[in-house]
Every structure is written in C-alpha cells, then in structure tokens.
Image: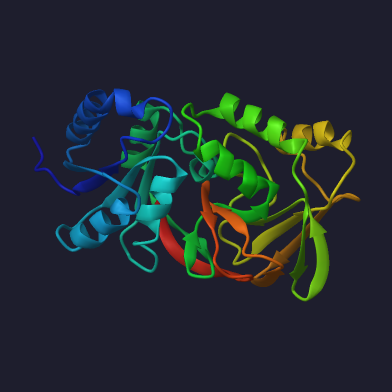
Length: 294
C-alpha cells in the first residue's frame, strides 16, 4: 500500500447549515474513509465560536504541509478560513454543508458530502479574486440595503434553510424602506446595493449572473425602489439566473467603489450580517489572491 501523502486539514463548524450538528460523527467518519481511499490523511478540528476558524488556520498553517485546508460548513465558515489564506500558497477546499453555499455553488462544487469529498481529492487548485469591504474580507458577495436587513433577521431564526429565508424575505418586503446614499459621489436611492465577486448569494439566488471570480472586477448591482407588483418578477429573475439591467436594475463592473451613507449601515458579507460603525464604506477587489480546490 502506498505511503500516506498530502495531508488535509479539515475545519468543521458544527453549527453550520440545517443538520450538520446532528451528524458530526458521520461527517468525521466519512472524511477519514475518503482520505484513506485516496491514500491521504485527514486532521479534523472543530470551531467553537465566531472567528474561531480563522484562529485555527493561523495556528495550524505551518504545522503541516497541507494539500488544502478544508472548510466544512457554509459561506461563513468558508469566509473565516479563506481570510487567513489570502496570499498564501495553501488552497482552501470546500465541503458545502451550510444553508446557502453561494461560493461552492458558483464554483460547481457538489452539495453532498460524498460527492464534494470526491471533488476535493480529485480536484486541482485555481486562483480566484477576493474582495474587501473596509477591513472585512469577503469572497462571494457583500452588500447593504434590503439583503442585509433580511440577512440580519434570518440570522435570528432558529430554523435555517431556503424556506426560512424566503419566509423572512416575504415578511420584510412589505415594510422595508429604501436607503439614500452616495455611490462614488452620485446620489442614489437604493432598495439594495450588492457587491458580487461570485454570482450569487447562495441557494441559487443569482444577483450577478455574469460575475467572474477571476476577472479582477466586482459586479455592483443597484436595485432602485420599485412598485410592489414588481417584486414577484424580481424574485423570479433572481432564482432563474435572469437578472439583467432594466429600469430598476443597474450593473457596473468596478475595481473599487466608495459608498457614503447617512447613518452607519447594516451590511452583509458572505451571508453574515454586521452593523458598521462608520458611514464611509470602501469596497475593492483583490485580484488573484486566493487558491481554491475545484
């Protein structure tokens, strides 16, 4: 039998997704079975709180010649691990067991544990862009406005998954008030403002269908206030990958954008809601800065 080579470090978030916390032992066992099948080895660590994955990467990065450091969870877990690997030769791998899995879906990574493990061990690293909102790294999407408001309310729910997200979105839609802001000095009244490195939020909600992870640009999508009747059409476009410029939707491809708001905005980054403490937001792309196994 060949010697074990190419060790992988797996960082598992037991709170990710809708069921991962209930089947940790199965996930662990399956990872080790696949590692053995591919004549490799696996070290598995568990996160205990927010930002813990970043700390685990930093403290273990030089402790082994890792073939990849693998995020086992959702976009939030991917974000925490990826931000510690920006500029590193060590790639991130993804086992998408979260509720949205936006980056994994964009990259074509399978959503089942077994298939994503096959993809991981058979895959090759590519280099993609990352982005930054002030000092917050993101890799899929970030934004403010309605999407951030829904993201915050969604994070407060006991149940996760698409059905909960749709229900929260529908209830919020009727009471949400669009925000005024300056975008690169231009007065804008926005229902939502999204910065897309990858094309979707997650759950196949494609906010920027033409976004390219390797082109050195971000797609900025501005949705202007619209009549209530248009909401159904907008949702249809979002989930059928048909979002396109219209009287209410505008796209710009940028390397950097400055946003100024009247009050510190609520934002989201890779599905995580966050209350800013400043009214000055600078978003920029970091070309070719993260290696990822696909």
